[in-house]
Length: 173
Image 1 (spheres, one colour):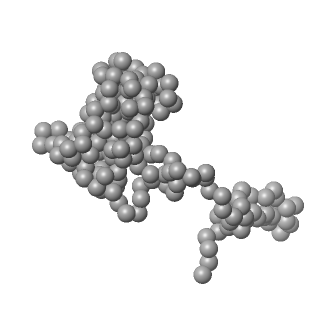
Image 2 (tube, helix red, strand yellow; image 1 turned 180 degrees about the horizontal axis):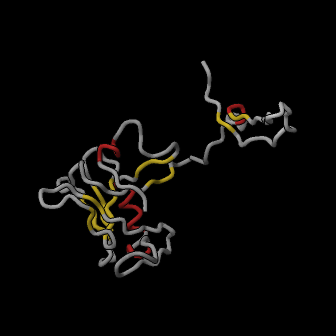
């Protein structure tokens, strides 16, 4: 269902989310849960151990579980029962979706989540982002094709072979 991230990856200044997207904040989660009550509307129709969702919103939340660093357990937990999503705040906060409940639980205290824990992230598209609209020839100049000929043992050459697949040429300085 994707990767689990620690909190340091979430708040890294280089950005975990690709250009045009951002990790959902606590406020984003509050908005989406208010608009999607009950939470079963956000959950996928498969893979949950019980009380699968209806996914009427298209959110398609899957039960990814989580990984917590504790003195007793340092393993993946609740893989078919829960999903915990990091929020974008600088203090470790998460939102939890549970298979046996129809509501989302938000931990907004920040005290229960250690930054070393492994939780999922959910991205949202930033307002006004319509995809990359840059130079259409940007990549065209970076790829080449070439053709080759075989030299046989009798020093004869073959006809020109078909073109190769595209080959990436990094920018030269």
